[in-house]
Structures are given as structure tokens and as C-alpha cells.
Image 1 (cartoon, each protein chain N blue to C red):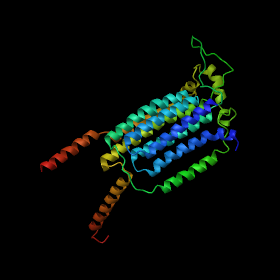
Image 2 (spheres, rainbow over the protein chains, first blue to last red):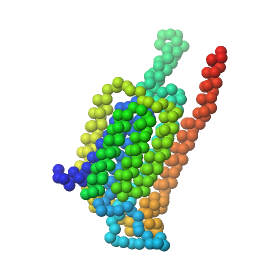
Image 3 (cartoon, chains in turn brown, yellow):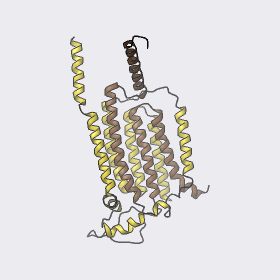
Image 4 (cartoon, each protein chain N blue to C red):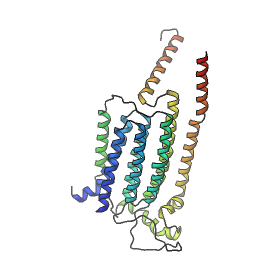
Length: 145
Length: 190
């Protein structure tokens, strides 16, 4: 455990901490909006992990310098950061907002049907409905079920 | 060295924001803090040289998703109900999973290592040959729109599907509400 090792891996540990905070929100809180926020934190932690894997010390953003006519100037002394993870994460961010918006729409619909966005209350209503249905079926079968 | 310090400062702020989200039970505050979180992560992306990702995150994460969440809490409820649930098991799960993940980072290449396997495969090709082949100064643009154009098309299909899904789930919302109100009115009159 040298200082170099710690500095070189510290970033990854921060992502793990952030990711676990997100996971904790998702699994331990019953409010559906808060669960979505937790998922977003989880997702952002993954994005940061990928982006930091492409970072090169002393590098700069992968955009070539151009002259006034917009012609690309090739300068072999510039170190560029790896652009491939950036492309991947750009796609992931946009897909992430698509899934988030679908989740939020489902929450609005759930609230309309159950008048609640708390997981426990929704489960209770479901259990009560199932119980009432069972009783109704039993009576239809002659009251012996 | 200064970059490392900025990194640590940004991470400290990110973790503080995430913990504040855990503690907060007013949903308006939760949504605002998630916007703050997105903006801080955009700043982190700038220090990690991913400027394209940073402005997408600032526009999409801090902008659009905050607006969507505000709309959702306006249509549903503004506070979270506190349950006296025991939080020990979730905490334990998180600690165990986190420990396993940290164990998994042990043999990863150092942060910023130019010889890491991730930086040696196709990235040098894109950085050297895209000038000739695509002639766009921003390498991210040339990969996104040209080399990996099919991925971007697939992404568009996903966004389109999600849009249709949202429309189908929410369509008729105001109609159903009106009908319910009318039914209630009739019940009151009867």
C-alpha cells in the first residue's frame, strides 16, 4: 500500500462509495421518486468509473486544434485522453434519461391507480385486493374454500 | 497534483450531496439535490477531459431530468412517508457489495496510466486516422457520428421507444381525471 497505489486507485473507491449510496437509497427507501433518484446516482457513479478509465495523466480533451480556416493542425506533442469511453457514456446518458422518464411516467400512473407512491402502501393495497378476491372466489365455490 | 486535489474536492462534494439525498425526506429537496449532483458530476467530467460528456450531463442530467422529476412530484406527492423499517439489512448488503467491488479494483491499472489496456486498443487508431478519414476536429464527434454511427442510431431507437412508452402510459390522464370528478359529483348529487 504505497502512496502511489492509493492515489492511483482512490478514484475507483470513490465511485464504489457513490454507487453503494445509490444502491442503499434504492433498496432501503419505499418512496418511488426517491428510488429513481437513487438509480440516477448509481448510474452516474458508473459513468464516472468509465470516464476515469479513459483519462491519461497530462492529457487534454480529444479535440484537435484548428487554424483560422478550420483546417486541423497536427501537433505530435499533445497527449489526448481516450475518446472511446466518452462516446460510450454519451450514449448511456441519453438512454439513462429515456429510462428515467419511463419510470417517472409509471410513477404518475401508479399514483393515479393506487393514490400512493409508497412501496409499502401499494403492496398493502395489492394484498387487500387479493384477499378480497380470494374470499369472493371461495363464496362462488360454495363457501368452503 | 492540483488535478488530484480538485478531484478529491469534487468527490467530497458529490458524496456529501448523495448523503444529503439519503437524509432528506421532502421530495422537492431530493430532486433539487439530484440536480446539484448532476452538475457536480459534470464538473468532474470536465476535470477528466470529457467535455462532451460534461455538457450532455449538464443539459440532460441537471436540466431535463430535474424538470421531469419536478413534474412528477407536482402530479403525485411532495413528501416521503417515513417508515420505521429496519435499515440494517440494506446497509449490510451495501457494505458487502462495496467491499467486493473495492476488492475488484485491486488489480486495475492506475488512474491516468497511458499504458492501461483500455487506452491501447482502438483509441490510438481513432486519434491518428480520424483526421484523414473523417476530418472533424472533435474525435468524439467522429466516433459517435461516423465510426459508431449504428450505435447512435440504436440509441435514437431506444429514445423513440421510451417516448412512445411515456405517451402510452400517460395518454388519457386528464380524460380519466375528468371522468372521476364527474362520477364524484354525481355521487354527491345522489
